[in-house]
Length: 213
Image 1 (cartoon, helix red, strand yellow):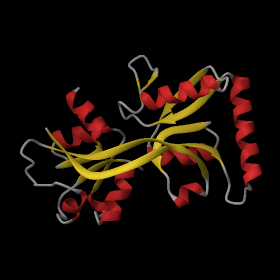
Image 2 (cartoon, helix red, strand yellow):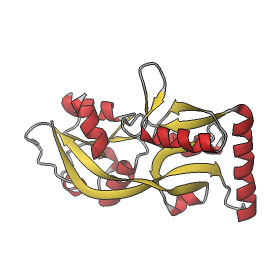
Image 3 (cartoon, helix red, strand yellow):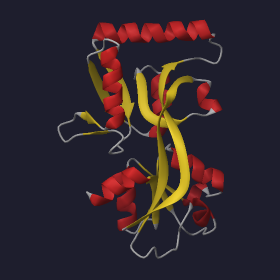
């Protein structure tokens, strides 16, 4: 395995509390207060996570783990909510699930964008990450960045569905047909080792942890 940094650092934040485009700031604050009150009554906060070890994942016995989960648990405890229950989903399903009230908030670490700010509220940034590119030893296709993938039309890139890496790859010029969407980092690494794709992009920390497992 070879994993290289690809030079893009992002600041990520929690998503919380549905806020419609027509909702005023006082109304949005009231919405947030009602959500917190409901969590306190239930004694549990329902969250959505992607399976991205180190950040968030489920242990073999089904318990949510990872430092984003730990931050969530600490914050909820301070707010009087004693338990956090996690559902594993893909990044592109998180905001729709939040809007449908399937989750109370999403500690997924998604990029803050103007489009997302129209429908959800964000916390302050909680982490900064650098993307990594996973390839086979020797990097047979000589892929070193998103741009190099874009410049090699026959090269495929595995990305987590709905992830920041997917969005950035498209922004740089990687064609949609070049992207192989996978549910988690382990599946992305398997796509490379199984010769489905020559490369996989995810956070460098996640790639390092999963490739060492």
